[in-house]
Length: 251
Figure 1 (cartoon, helix red, strand yellow):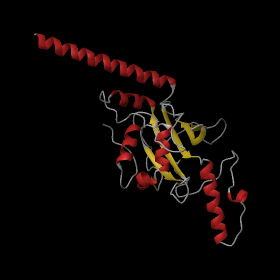
Figure 2 (figure 1 turned 180 degrees about the horizontal axis):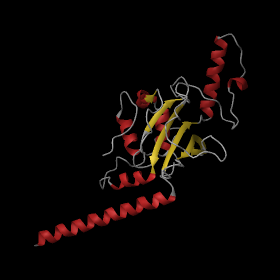
Figure 3 (figure 1 turned 90 degrees about the vertical axis):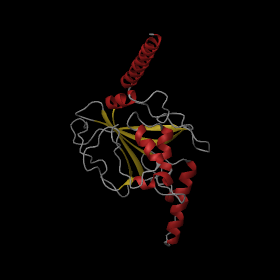
Figure 4 (figure 1 turned 180 degrees about the vertical axis):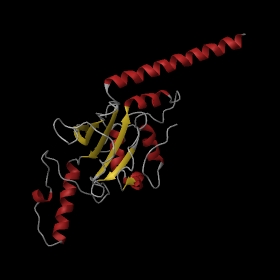
C-alpha cells in the first residue's frame, strides 16, 4: 500500500479514512464539508508550511490561508494561462441542499496530463453570514468603532461574504488541498479488496444545512470508464479463480 502523504501531528481515525479515500478518488462534497467544518477531528491536521517536495498522487493537506499564504507553491509545474506566467485555475462551486456550499479551484499538470490539484474552501450559508457579520460588529464595538450590518458583512466580487471564524470554531480560512493522478487512482481502486466498504462515499449526516445533493465527480469521464473496466476485470478474475477452485475440489 502506498504511504499516505499528509501533515498531521495527531492523525485522527477520521483523517486517516479521508486520506485513504484520497488515494482512490476525489472526495465528495459531503466529505469535504465534514473536514472543513469539523475542527474537533481535523484541527490537529492543519499544515503550517507549504509542501517541502512535490506532492504525490493522493496527498491531502489542510491549511489555514490566514497563516500559510504560499501553500500553492508546491514545486509542480501547472498549466499556465495563455501568454501569461500565472497558473490557469478552473473555479467551480459544489451545491448542497440547493445552495453553493463549497468553492473549488482546479489546476492541471503541464507535464503529466492525468495529475491534478483541487483546493476547496467553505462558502458560508445564510445563517453563517449573519453570524460572521455579528461577530465583526461586536469586535468593532469593543474597539470603539461603531459598525453597521452592511459594513460588518463585506462581500467579494462574487457576492460572497469575506472569510472569518465563528464562535463554534468554523473557520472559513481553511482550505483542503487534494492532489490526484487519475491513472494512479484507478490502479489503487482496482486493488481494493472486494466487499471493502471503508472507501465508500460518506453518507449525508442529518441536520440543517447538511446532505450533499451534488458531489464532486470521481474523475473525468474517461477515468470513470477506466475504473469501471478495472472493476469488471477484477470480477472476471475472481470468477475464474472460483471455477478453478471448484474444479480442483471435484478432482
